[in-house]
Image (tube, rainbow, N blue to C red):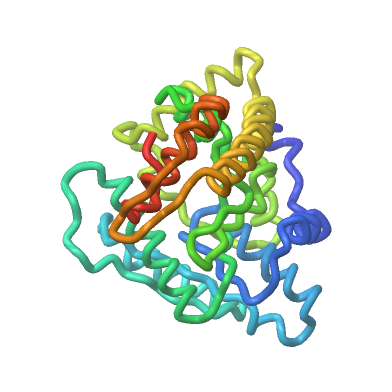
Length: 293
């Protein structure tokens, strides 16, 4: 979709997306101040206004993480705070106060960002955190994982709904083109912040956008890539189902980080299911956040 054909995201579309994901207030929205997250914040406000009448503001909290990695980050966070005040939306700035790494900065920043967001949601008793990943983000994630040699789970890219502990991560905009989010902001007269790191070719995701544009020019638009991710998500769901079934019948997790898996049932299972079961057990007994590849 080109900017000329872009249309603002309607409240009706967003309501349908939120209902499909069973989102209930109170909710938090991760807001960097960029176009995607500001559009999500406006859509969430309008969704709550329609469903909650006068009490909508009690059901919405905007969270901005100041990583302290750029000179203007604190000022940008304050700018978002001002916009939220104008919109009547509660807002908190979460600061990364620890020492910063000298390598793998984006990965470390992402890990810290989610830790801060999780803690803020837990403090307020919020069960749903809304994230503004959109269609182009989904396509880029699929391509990055493809280049890393990922299997079904990686090629499924980002899930519309995932869970970590008691907190649900909700991505209602994965089917929405970025151009429609720009159109949403322009229609509302809402400004946004352009992050200069989005154009820094030092980062893999930024370099991927160059390849992504070439693929689009060759007839592989983002909607085809996201359709592939959707196919992989269905395959992932099937694998997860049979992995759960295998673990329920064949695995025992004991104390002191000890687990046992029935070798006969393991060998009888499809290889992918068996590998996923082993990875899950390693994650469980090692108290790891992510499963090994």
